[in-house]
Length: 85
Image (cartoon, rainbow, N blue to C red; front, side, top):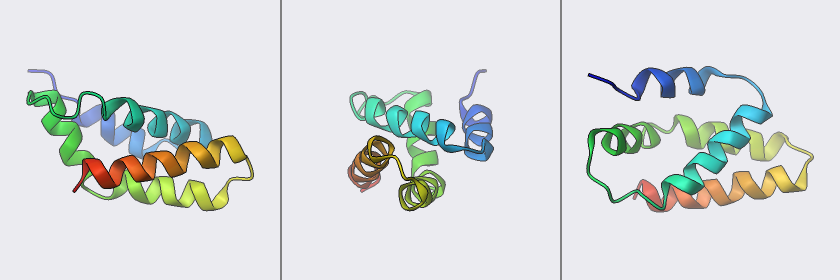
């Protein structure tokens, strides 16, 4: 049986702004399919609720000098509030 959890765990440990930008874009895209109720979406929703993605995005938002990256991080944080409510 396939699971997304190992990939999400690796992603959470991947250092650098590039990985965090991918995370921000992923969260933005995930919002379009959030209501689906399959195993993949349940696993991702559970992972988003751990606080790990939010903590990473907040740290990146505060650390970046790139206004475009800051915009992506901020947007993803807003989307996370909706997705994890």
